[in-house]
Image 1: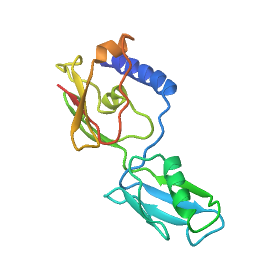
Image 2: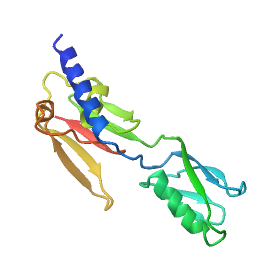
Image 3: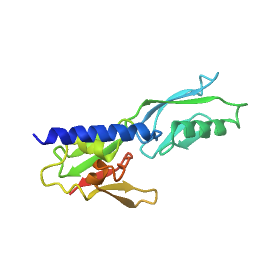
Length: 181
């Protein structure tokens, strides 16, 4: 019965943190996009970010999309289209965000992969995984984050420090793995 106040504290702390930390969505493999080029229906396309992180559009060809915000992709496409038209107006709409996934494993009630929608921190992910098990080491939670060079960055997280207000929760990115020993 002790679990309910802990989960309430988790949700309260994580909601307050999410409200103060806006994070822009970054595109990833599998995301479905609608690219609109003003007054050019032939260039306007519905596309999906391929597993290699690219999309393909007429005239422009292959363009890296993974890791960019929709605004950054819009600017990249507009710059590429300037070679073919005057002042192209491009809009990038995320129709379906399917790439945002994290894994929570270890001493949680429901370990596994989960979709995240919008900014999500470690506390929220642990809550979505059903909370800590009885013998979880809440002072040594780790986030494994893949980096651009192909390696993995380890971010240490102390749940008790966050709940006590001594630290802020770590915002997760797609591809992160949360390990609760």
